[in-house]
Length: 254
Image (cartoon, rainbow, N blue to C red; front, side):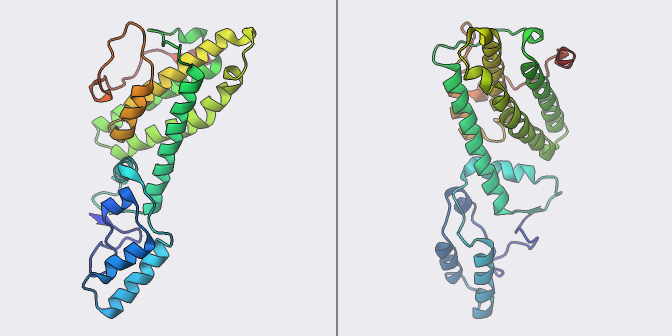
């Protein structure tokens, strides 16, 4: 059951009904109030509902898109069969989608148009930061897959979000910028390894996230280059879902 952010049952008599299309497409406060007036609330209930809308959505509801709404609803499933839906959380996931979009754009620029991903990589020969990100990616895959198998969808979304946000975007991408922005021959080997690790993270991360955010992930995945002799699937939906790689990258990091 979907409830509002205050835990109240969504009901026309309370005037707290939220149309999913309004979350996806966005709506102004004026339009929200107009919807209330078109209902069958008595004057007292209408006034209470109007004040509630003004308090909860002083600027209306911004356009969040289907991916953010879908991810938010899945992330709420730990609350048994009742979801106290806070639109601010959906807005937060919309902003996160923008961050993922920017991460892919950064990768495409720094990989370059001539980049071809390798069929395999030797993790032990990579810089420590690359070993680390591939190690935590492996852990995120394991956590996501095991959570999905146990129908713990909240744990799956948490594992994916944490890896993308806090480990890939906040740490790894920032850490490899000195290599990618430096054209010195001294760092050529490290720069190549960083590109390979970045591509692996983007490709695997998008496939890992796809069931939760299918639409924008499809478009971003299509942008990524593929290994020269690989048989590229026509859609990310047809590609293999990530699985744990039996490589002890943690030992390499020591």
